[in-house]
Image (tube, rainbow, N blue to C red):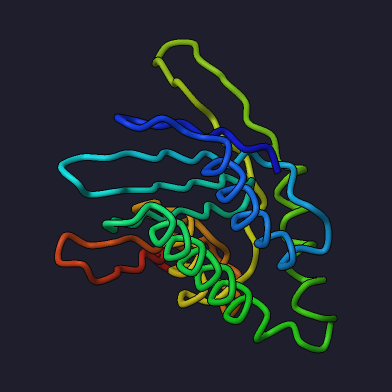
Length: 185
């Protein structure tokens, strides 16, 4: 993992930097291979409130956590706990269906490797399309799609329904609940 640590209204000392890298580096134990993604850490202080924001973008998964606390070291511990819970929740739900294919670490690594193979393309002619994404639609149920959407921090998620083999979309409604879009038959 490559760390990008910056401070707002705070000088990032070597001790603070080492502590962040040590604590967040422990997340590597959840992966078969060390993730090559960047780890973006923003440390800030506003009105005696210490805040840490951590973002670890991967191809198929976005880990993100932020915590406020009076002590920066305590905030770091809290955000690492939050990221661990996200990883465990993701692995548990995704791998519940695939237990017979291998260990959770193995499945999680396969998903990460699959995502690395996907490529982003930019195409524009008449209408200005600023970004094009291409990805394989993995067969899953709507519950798993909602989990994927939440982990990525998106408002919608496109997937292949495992039961019907049709393309579906789950989305977050304004009332905080979820919706499912299915094609007419």
